Structure formats: C-alpha cells, structure tokens
Length: 93
Ligand SMILES: [Cu+2]
Image 1 (cartoon, helix red, strand yellow):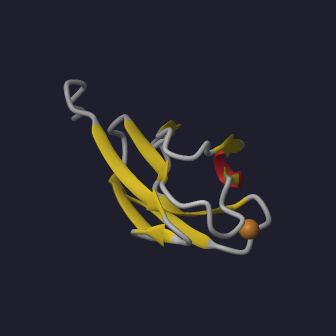
Image 2 (image 1 turned 90 degrees about the horizontal axis):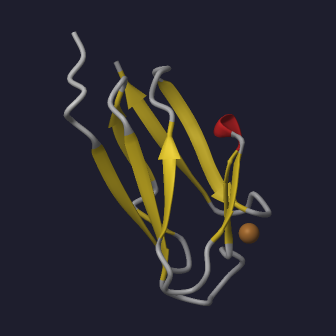
C-alpha cells in the first residue's frame, strides 16, 4: 500500500559539517532534503549524492532543496564536493 498524500522533508544544516549527518527516510514516500549552508567555513559549498547523480551548489544562506528517490531502500552517502565531509541518507523499508 502506498500513501501518495504523504511527503517527507528533512533539513541538514551545513555549518562546518553536517547537522545532522544522518537522515532517515521511509522507502516509497516522496522526499526532499533541504541543505542550508549557514557558515562559510570549510569546503562545504557543494554537496554530492553520487548514488542519486546529484552534485549541487550550496550558496551561503540560500537553502537548496534536493529531491531524493526513495524507491530503493538502503544507505547512501552524501559528501562535500571534495568528499571530505560525509553524511548518509538511510532509506528504510
Ligand atoms: Cu570538502
């Protein structure tokens, strides 16, 4: 059974790292993660989610919504553009 009326949204604050660094989503429910970079420190001006073919710029103080395909359960990484800072998206069945 699917509930098409439900969406899920998570926010990750980018402030010299990722807060939180783990985002848990439910499989099959449309999802967006909003990355909000509030600090110029570090090399976090891009975020990549290679499993979803996403590489996005994160302009300072301009939250960026990234749509996540939740059709496949699993654990997927996200990282800064240079793959130094890392977090993960967990899609639970
Ligand atoms: Cu980096």
